[in-house]
Amino acid sequence: MAKSPKPGSVENRRAHWIEWTTGAVSTILITALIGWISYQAATQADGPPDLSVTIVSSAGSAGGYLVMFDVNNAADRTAAAVVVRGEITDNDNVIETAEITLDYVPARSKARGGLIFRNDPAGRSRVSATGFSEP
Image 1 (cartoon, rainbow, N blue to C red):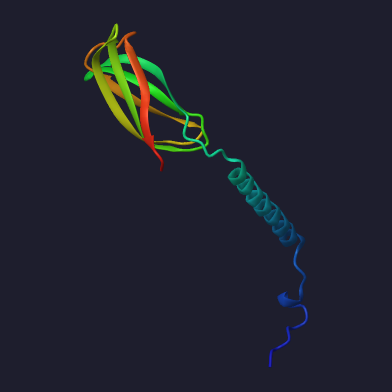
Image 2 (image 1 turned 180 degrees about the vertical axis):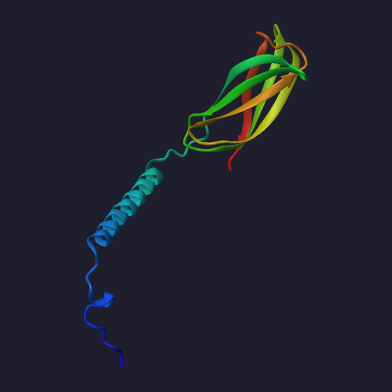
């Protein structure tokens, strides 16, 4: 047989208003979070990553000439193993090529990297993303 609580004990008291407020706020936040995630899942575009490369700086270094760049991803999809190739050209002739693979570029974000050339790339360099894989 179960014992009945003593009068005035904790078991007989009603919940404090702070407990009710905390429960209500938590319920609202969890409901809003579930709604936001559902909305994002329903409206997210299913297209490929949209990658563009911008040269940030070019400077001489101990190992050659360093060309820093940003890879921007304007799409709602992450790109993994992003291959970026840089070329130094003289008219239409390619003098030197350098390549790097970035681990990933998140959706609607950017990643920064650098290419090192032996020749001075001033005004003669092109940098572009040439490939990626889906994570």
